[in-house]
Image (cartoon, rainbow, N blue to C red; front, side, top):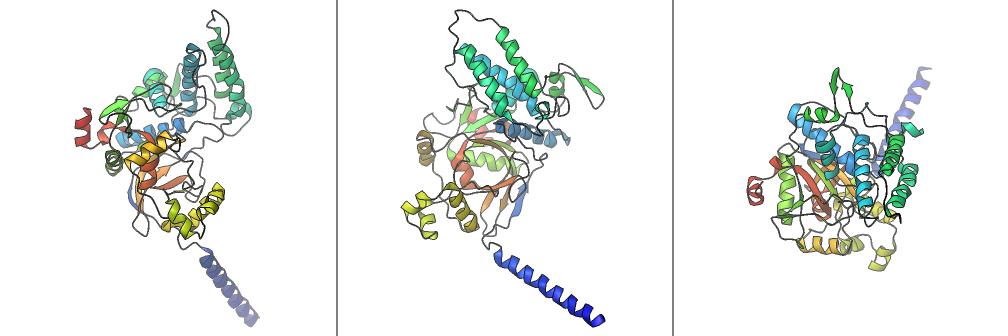
Length: 401
């Protein structure tokens, strides 16, 4: 009996060893192995689910991190409150312009800041949990916007000589039905607040936040409204040379600040496994054994799969100022997504990446975190919001802030 048990144990150990060898053989040798250079505190990963509210989630995550840095306190701020106030304001603009502008789910980092400054904010738990009012477990804006978009369009393009203000009452009813009513007063941790007094209690100076960009169609060291549809409030961004834009991000992270980043993630180099590379197409062709025609015919899924397999050996382009401008003007560089830059890490080859919090739940290889090379971030930045105190002193002096 003992002999049989011994033989079984040996067989089990052999099987285990074989399984480990097989696993090791299958593991991609190019997979990045990250060492953290600097990591700042952030709040938990959220999930925007089926809603175009990355601008809302990423910017509130930014302010939550700012509160953590300033006070050590953890808050979960309510995206639905911001969405309700923002969509009403956006509808009012569309109606004022008789429909000659866009009404959509998207927005910019300035929208949550504007909301907090003008309407305040509430913590999670005061309004209904996202999706709960219509039987979903998370946000699903498909039906919501299918109702709201034609409603706003009908008012904005009406042939009437005069419209009443009742359309706002009707729109507020739609917002309340899908997002919940925004409270005028509430109690949180035993204290009574209004949204404005709650915002004032969070320990931040809401005038400390500025937006940064880098393009050559406006003069450097001046401010302009970045020309993208979701920048509908037309807030101004400071325009600095690309290298200074990069220096601001690095300085912010290394000094304990996070960055509310807005940019382009529609590139094949942005993979669903939690990595992003600004890859060099010509070198990729040669590494994958394909010519240009074959490479261009590959689906985005196959391209990103190849990029994942190459891992740390993905050949990257070094972004330039001229390249950024050309890609912006020819529609290659688009305003797709908002995320939160909160750290810097390097791989086994010494290449540095930004650690970036996403709002798609705990997805991908790194459970909701993306490692995006510095080249990718600088090449694909539309604009970003940062605490002005995180900007290097020489740049602040030039900007006069």
